[in-house]
View 1 (cartoon, one colour):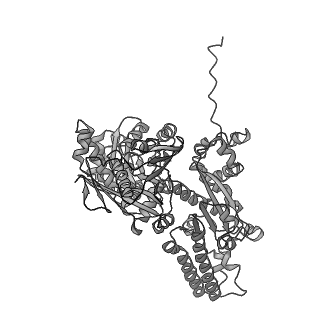
View 2 (tube, helix red, strand yellow; view 1 turned 135 degrees about the vertical axis):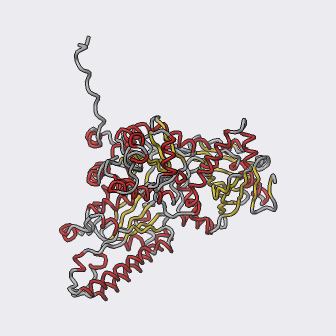
View 3 (cartoon, one colour; view 1 turned 90 degrees about the horizontal axis):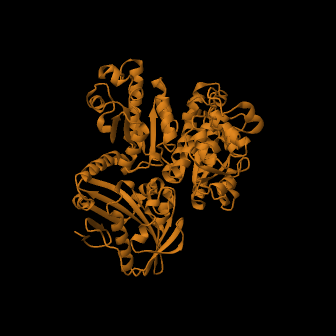
Length: 635
């Protein structure tokens, strides 16, 4: 029997990434990797990436077949092998498995111009064409003038524009370009300041041409390196640039990789939607319960101005469609009083879709917040100055992005913005009105609570649905919905804007957009249906609907209209696909519930058929307007 005086052995610490690597268990434990990478700095992430890059993606997928992968082709002007380690780590931070394809040195023109190149055969999701200042200065004569640089910079940007067009015509990949930083070692070679000024002008004009490529090429993203250089990252390391042709420094490539990680996360449909902020010590200085409303710091003084600046950034994010919530351990009435009436506050109660102030565990509050907004908890970013609260949320809700901030409020902004959690390719009209729509949704939930039955609630809600063909003005919103909708998404096919545009131009395909409204207001564009005609067969390739409007009969009304218009045009059968993901289980029986029978596949991936004889009806409480028919259903 053990001696009761002997202390119990200490709990074994969680293994590190290096521990798992040494034990040969890194592939087996890959789902733990994002948590193990949390909090590492750039240098630590690069070291972690060197270990992760040794993994074979197929080995990981054999053990964890549901792991989302991202195929990334890397090409460019200089030596780019140092990019792979930080890129591997940055994607792994977001739960993505990298499949890299690294091109030969300075092969970007051949890679992108030749439709049969190895780069295109790799079928990448992202193509990184990494450019550096030497792409111009390697070609200038000696001696050189500003005229020489201007001529060559124009030639290079014209070549890049042509390559962007070739990539769009050949691949479904997003092409990622970058601006060219201008190191002092080139401006200093001009001894007169007038020439230096002219060099600066023409160099910026060349970068402007690169940045404007996004206006004419919807599948191009141009990363501006100037803000990254302004953070203090050297453009290059002279010895590596001269000896190995690595013309961008390892530090700058690591920051570039972080930006690419944000793009990869967005393409994989993992962009965050909601920001939950703590109040005491985070949004304002001091503790409301101890210092009182007059004692908190929200403006004035050094720390007050820092909190004010942070509030301004939070408000800026909210104005672009990020759902702002507050989660605070406080009594609700004092919090409400501060948000409504405190003269120094930048953020007000109306800026938040919900303010939660109580003494319950914050992870419980976040779970309930997610449910009330009909979002997954993985849609949230949580910001708090308490290491305890951050640690608890990270442990209990590992899919929540936790942003710890410390006692120095001047650093809050950088901590929040560092990971681009809310980055998107393009803002849409729906983004700019999202906060108001979600606030209306909470009013709808309160309205629901006033009824004894769901049926009576739906009748009184006065649901209206619009179904029409998508046009060019809808491309950005439709693409965004495919990237961000996870729960009611039958196949989770992620489409870039150019892919949506190609479907609009395909005579055999049709993209329908769904709008909805009710007694509380217009919900905007909330869904899309992707179909294609093959003789007398209609294929529903995907059907998706915003989580804001679940369970109101909208999905049944839309499906009924799609089938009815198909039968009117001679369709004798409709085939619909479903592919299971970790988040769309709630719609796995949607087609069977509406008269479809499974003809192939299983619960993971199935094909369903409707014989077009007994069509589902539009729910009686829904008023449907179909642009291809005269009048309304159930008017």
